[in-house]
Amino acid sequence: VLACNDDGPASCANFSSLIPAVGLEAGVTYYIVIGGYSATDSGAGQISIAPFVPCDIGTGTATEVELCGEDLNGGCNNAAGGSPSQPIAINDTITGEFWAAGGTRDTDWYLLNITEGTTVALSIKSSLDCFAAIVDTACGGIIGTATTGACPGTTSVCLAPGSYYIVCLTSVFDGYPCGGTIGNSYTINVTGTPCDAAAPPNDTCANATTAVEGPNPFDNTFAATDYNAVTC
Image 1 (cartoon, one colour):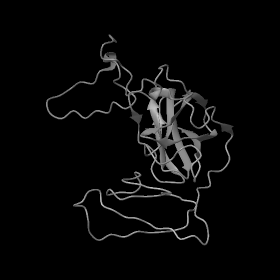
Image 2 (cartoon, helix red, strand yellow; image 1 turned 90 degrees about the vertical axis):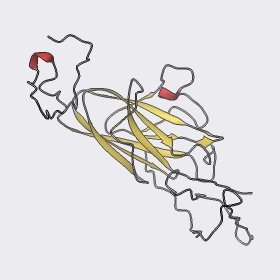
Image 3 (tube, rainbow, N blue to C red; image 1 turned 135 degrees about the vertical axis):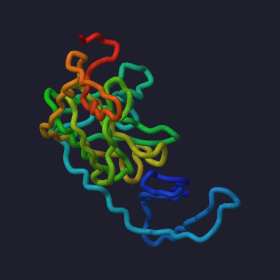
Image 4 (spheres, one colour; image 1 turned 90 degrees about the horizontal axis):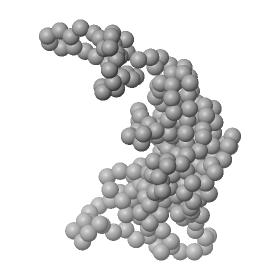
């Protein structure tokens, strides 16, 4: 068996399967076996075969410190704790490697610091099915949305001044071992433009808005007040 796939990756919808690349020799006959998930899963379908076209990931301005198979920048997923990460800045393009094998995937975490309201845009390129996202440093979750698309996958969000994680990872937990046929490389590019990230005018109780009976529209984007903190 040269390659096998059950469900996935994420870009292959409706529980279909995808084998992204297999190196074959000219003049050799190969067999393709197709089966259902269980004995009762059968019916008509379609299989598409095409030459593999690798993603042109370009050239980075810096290199990830972690080699494929190591765990030096595991961030919020680091088993030892401490959220280790690698610095990244606006206009950086970092070349890195990630992998997915045996039900585990590598997650690469970068720490971005910004000093003003900035619309941060991410662009990730790889031959592997993957995505990138911005995560708060408390490891609470993704800010905005993860990248969508492939070669590149992109996303952007307006952020207030502060520190943020950028995480890069494959979309699946298997099928991309270190040294695989299609490699493990990616580039993550970060750009930024100024945006209005000011707190709302009623961010503190000293500037509270008078509530009335009935609907009271509000927008707490970039609100900074802790509900336990006394502000007036």
